[in-house]
Length: 421
Image (cartoon, rainbow, N blue to C red; front, side, top):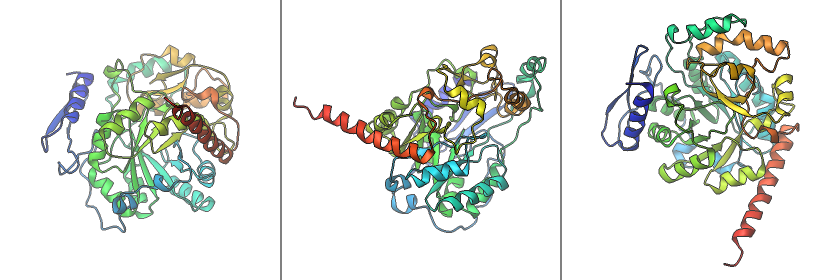
């Protein structure tokens, strides 16, 4: 069975799951056989982690206080002064200064822990705490499984004839070490991308006092996350910049049209009982108002902040955002689908295989050289579809502007709805 067909079978099973402890085979090819037990919350007893080594969690130590979401049924979003969440942008743009500025203006700032060590993550958390006493979040990458070298060796051999490359390697992005950090030194929110943590790990974070948010791109993924105990769902639409945050990335599924943000919000609100944060293609107050009207509890913006002075966005990237360049989904730079500004490297490598993070590490020198050469045609310039609307403005000012513009847009919409029939 192909990855795509197997995945579709799995998703269909989730949508109608009623059998406790049912084992589902996701794939059977030369790479691996992946088996999961998907167990619905209140109906099932456990939920096994997907697609990474060490699925059996270590014993959970007695920790401190359950999260407020577990204790009261309320989440931080319910008390946030403005329904704006900073997207965690790994690889450079995310900084403590950016997160602190968003918190200062009444939003929820996030630190991206992706590609950082646990020690570096701890240092950034400490720096952010120096800047604000407000709630904030930390985002983690849920590790997948290694990809056999024969699946991507030909691609890297082709690139190596023209570009400098590094070693293709797999790692778990310090998953266990970062979880240990966040349970011993908790933060208000821990969000997860590229998968759903096990029920046991989510409970461990809850007992440490953290809310747990999970990025989803479909109703099926949302049901898995709710079953595992997620407090909030981050609904990432196809318009979003950067990596697709879904649980799987199979080329066989590329023919399936990914859901846009507004569609995904409406589907989730109709099918799962959890607060939803809308992410993808939101760059204005009107976009925020639209997402809230569709049922989102808040909105998550990333690309909109890329030109703020507090970000770590490179000069090359900042300049490129000012040009009305179309975006594309690509695996060319990282081996995982991501949306970025269309350039020659993406166009030349539309057949890039799925092999993350192996290809990400292999193309590191290539991307570094392109930045040094100011070559926008050979570097990943992640951006959402609404990138032409970005502004060069301090982050706190941007949050306040978006908040006021969202109020104006909401009032305008209400004025139309309040007309006599």
